Each structure stands twice: as C-alpha cells, then as structure tokens.
Amino acid sequence: MKELFQMLNDPRFHLLYGVTQRFSTGPEPRLVRLNREGFKLVEGVKKKTLVYPRMRLAVHPSPQKGDAFSPIFGQITEISERSIFVEAVEPDEKLRQAADAVEKVDLAALPDRGADLAKILKGLGLNTRSLGQDCKTLIINGLNPDPGVAWAEPMLLTHLDNLKAGLDVLRRLSPAEKILLAVPKEMRLHYHDIEVVHVPAWYPASVNALVIKAVTGKEHPDGVGIVGLHNVWSLGRVARTGLPLIETVLTLGSYTHSGNYIVKEGSTLGELLHFANIELRNGDTLVRGGPLRGESLDRLDRSVTKGSTGVFVVEAGTIPPMEGHSPCINCGACVLICPARLSPSFLSRNAEFALHERNRAEHIDCCLECGLCGYVCIARRPVLQYIRLSKYKLAQADAAARLRELQIAAPQSPMASAAASPAAAAQGGE
Ligand code: SF4
Ligand code: SF4
Image (cartoon, rainbow, N blue to C red; front, side):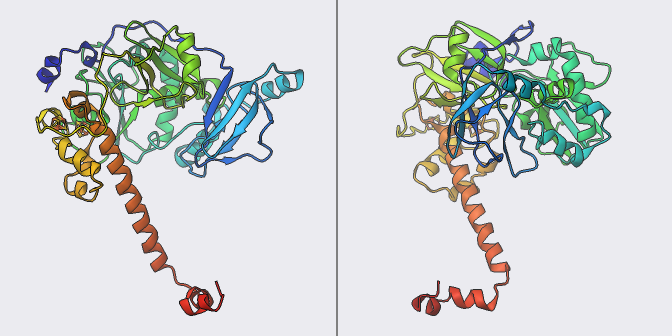
C-alpha cells in the first residue's frame, strides 16, 4: 500500500511536516456564522440581540452535542434554520461586564465522572460523543488527519499542558480501562502518564479504522474506541480556562503558504484567508476540511465549526476538477487503491443511478471516506461524493423504516383510530 502512494509521487501523503512552532492566534472576526441546525434558541435570543463572548445562544437536544456560544461581542443580524449570524460591535460597559461575569467551572474540583461529567461538558460547548464512547481501550489518534493538515505535531510537542489537562478529564469521562496515544512512528515521543504507540504516517493511515488496525492488529475489534487529538486539545482548553469552548485549531493552507491557527468558531473562510494572506484566484477550489476528505465550497461567507481541521485553497490546475456525470471507464484504479477493499466504481455508479439499496450488498458501510478513489480517478468522477450521497439516502431510508415500526408498535386509542379511518375523514373528522 505504501509503495502505491509513493508511486503517486505526492509528498503531501506523508503526514509529517516538521512543523513544530506554536499556533498563531487567528483574526478577531467582523462576522461570525454559527451552526444552529437542530439547536433550540435560548429564550430571549433573537434578531438584534446584543451578545458577548461565551454567551449561550442555543442548546442542542442531544446530550452529546455541545451548546452554541457567541465567540465575539456583537449583534445578531439574522437567524435562519441553519445559522445564527453575528456582526461585531464595539461593546459598551454593560456588555463588557456581562462578558466578565461568565461563570468559570473548575472541572478539577468537581467529583463528577462519566455521564454526569459529560452533561457539564455539553454545557461548556463540547461534543462528547467520541470522548465518552463505551469501550475498554480508547486510542487517541495523534496523526494529522489529512494530507496538508499540519497541527498534530506542534500540538503533541508544544501543547503538553493542554493535552495533559484534556487527558485528566478524559480519564474521568471515558469508561475505558486503558488509554493509548497513537503517534507517527518517526516521532520519538515519551510521555510519563500515557502509553505511546507508533503507527505509520502515510495517508490514509490516519483514518480512525486504520489507526485501530495498526494499534491492535485487528479490523473492527470489540471494545476499542478512538478519539481525535483535536478533541482532547479542546477538552484541555476547557479544563484549563474553565470557560465554554469558542475556538478551534486548524491549518490554513495553499500551495505556497501553510500555517496553524487558533481561530474563533464561526469565523468566515473569507476573513481567515485574508488574515493568512492566502489569495483565492479564478478557478481555484476552496476546501473546508482536509484537501482529500473535506468539502469544496463556493462561498467565502461559509464558516468554520469546532470540528473543522483545515481550510485550503487548491490552486487551479493542481488537481483536475471533478466532472459530475463523467462516465466510469473501468480502469480499476479506485479498486486497487481502496484501503477498505471495496469497489468504489460500483458504489459510485449505483449512487449515480439512485440504486442505493444495491450498495448495501456492496458493503458501502465499510467505506472509510478516505477520498483516495476520487483522487486517483482518471475520469474525474466525484466518487466519494456519490458514496456519501448513497450513505445519506440509506440512512434516511433506515430512519423512515424505524419510524414506521414505531408507529405500528405504538397502540392507538380507539378514538384516534376512528378519527384516522377513511370513513371519519370522509365525514370531515380529520
Ligand atoms: S473513500 Fe473510496 S477509497 Fe476510501 S474507503 Fe471509501 S470507497 Fe475506498
Ligand atoms: S478510477 Fe474512476 S474511471 Fe477508474 S474504475 Fe474507478 S470510478 Fe471508474
């Protein structure tokens, strides 16, 4: 496998970059756009509300999804189904006092563990799904997630206090008996309070399922969970400040420039690129996430979330653009490179013709979404995008089936049954 990637002759597939300096602080945004899909607004939060840093704006019904907070002093200019927009304002004394009054939570002094602790962390803006997963062994994935993303090395080498604080909380949160840290085998790291395991650092070795296999020697072993280094860093940030999380770490990169930054959640891509002096020219592709697994966007007013790992400008001509309906020529390159031993050409063709159910038999659920199939496709088919579409359609079908089962299982009252009957409807009884 390694030889195959080296044949691609792309040094970015090697996930070590020798970047060891601390992160730079990103810009103070003039506009933020926060995700509010599925969130319920806090009472009193509406258009024109003045807000301050770490003011709670919305709460998610899932116990594992962190609450949403304003990262800046500002005024809410718009609230849609999907976003909350905040424009920066110069704060008056009252707003400053409100920001200073945000209560700090001393996590170290609290006795809480497990689900009780997860509830507190949710209230501090942290997503806890992967942090509290049910497992006996928990692996921290310490590799740069995607080619081009370069924050893992400096995080491991220079943010030790933050990681240690994150690890202390993680030990109380996770039921795991053993926590391991997986790092590239070229890094000679030894921490006194955690066992370090060395794994290969050629993409796609950083994909969670492949890190688990490299550490345990098994595919899908029972009782093994995995969490990203990024999450542990976020946990440490909250543990050290005692304040809600309003930042993320990401790499801002282009062919000529790359840097790691701590940026405010909700910062728009346009402001971030301007701050990092990265120019976007005609024909370039703007990517949120890693260049292989991220999503290409057509608007600079899109923003970063707590989970964003990078923002990249892929220069025109570097990688030929995808062609939506370009036919598969059966070259087999995607099959050869797929680390999950799938047939991406079949999966993408089934998705293209809306034959999603056929993809179950093709084990689409085993796709790691590494993006290599699309990268090597000579016909420039959006293979990964087709696969994601199919997964989404199948998940929708499963959810609808579950709902039908629940409706059949739930006993209806005779009155409800009568009202729902065609005869009652015919009499205007609905
Ligand atoms: S994204 Fe493509 S190459 Fe990667 S696992 Fe899925 S099907 Fe295979
Ligand atoms: S790499 Fe592209 S053209 Fe070749 S088999 Fe796969 S989908 Fe078809």
